[in-house]
Image 1 (tube, one colour):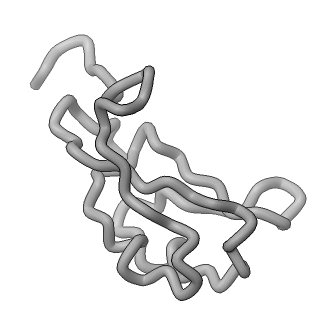
Image 2 (image 1 turned 180 degrees about the vertical axis):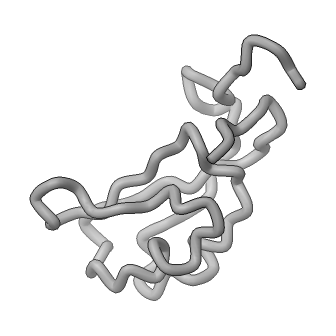
Amino acid sequence: MMITGNWREYRPVLEPEKCDLCMNCVVFCPDACFQLDEAGEMVVLNEKYCKGCNICINECATDALSKAYELDFEDGVVRLEKPF
């Protein structure tokens, strides 16, 4: 997997209380960014590899995922040392 560059515009945000562990995000994510935590009780997102395609948001059966503008986060986009 490749670390996402400086171009991601939106990232998914998970509201764990809405998640019913349907696993649609895990199944449909083309970059395998979702997985269960070690206890198997919660889905977690590895934002470092998320490309912001938002397929997970469209496939979430319980609306537990929403999109948020990348620059609204303190860490902004994951920055690479070199842009290419």
